[in-house]
Structure formats: structure tokens, C-alpha cells
Image: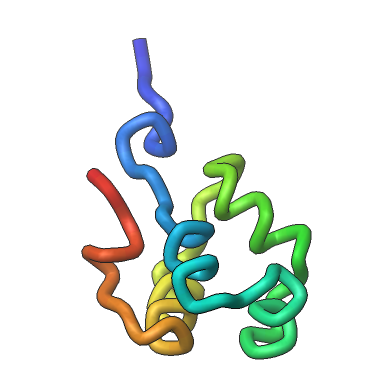
Amino acid sequence: MGFIMNDIVKCRLREIRLNHGLSLRDLETKSEISRGHLSNYENNKVQMSINTAVRLAKLLNCTLDEMFDY
């Protein structure tokens, strides 16, 4: 029996984005990542690549540890 990584690692992107007073549209503009992809990351529907995680962490001035609960 396998496991799904998203059940273990939870992305806190929405919480961090909202703490910065940003809408999905704002983050889409700043990151050049579509709102659809950002929404999927926020809802833990898909895992983001490490490159995307680093890019978003830099934009949101947070660490990768802050972005993910594991």
C-alpha cells in the first residue's frame, strides 16, 4: 500500500499569501504562475517543483520550512 506525499506535506501558500495581503491575481502577476496552478498548490491538489517552491518563497520572503508543514 502506497501513500500520497500531499497527505504528508501540506503547503501553506494560501496562509502566507493572505498574510502578505495578496490576492491570487496579485501572486499570479508577481510570479508569472497561473492562478489555476497557484490554486492547485494552495489546495494541495498537486505538488510544486522545488524550483517553483524556491521562487515563491523568495517572492513571499519566507523559507521553504515556513511554506510547508511536514
